[in-house]
Image 1 (cartoon, rainbow, N blue to C red):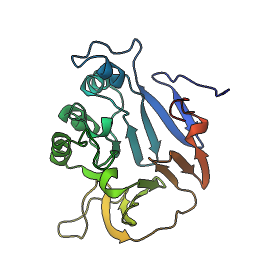
Image 2: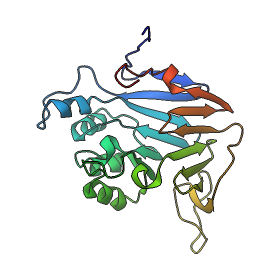
Image 3: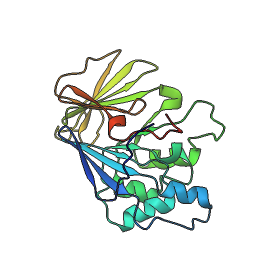
Length: 231
């Protein structure tokens, strides 16, 4: 079809406007010999990307399993982040306690189809996320989950209910008794049926894969073209 492919390598950084996207995984040589077989080896060599915009940071983990998470921990990669795209649709072989302790996400989104035959996300992963104090969003219940940020605030929209929650990332910790919940940057109790995207913001839509920075949309498929099988 004439599509140009590009193989990304550990340590590479791609700029989308003013937004850096950093490759944290897989290693070279690739991970091998998972006790769960070749399919797990393939999962453990998933592309892991980190996106940073101001005070907001996102970690995209593909289908990474526990051995891949262990490699990230051993490699001392910059794992602390605000929003986690939970690996492998919430499989019990991913999202270990150690990985959550290192990353310290405050929000997580799980991409899984409703009534999927694998029963993802698994109760084990939900429990680990809840024990870590992570706020969970799920596409099987919430529909598309849209994150938008200008680097100082973050809004999360559940497409199914059209509800939007807003988080202030740079406020000082709240005093006891003050309304709202803590989010390192703090939760603003704002739930709205719809919210206009402001100019100068950066937003990532995990379903369509579009990124908007400074009011200009960029289709990630131009940078990471789909394979013929997935096109």
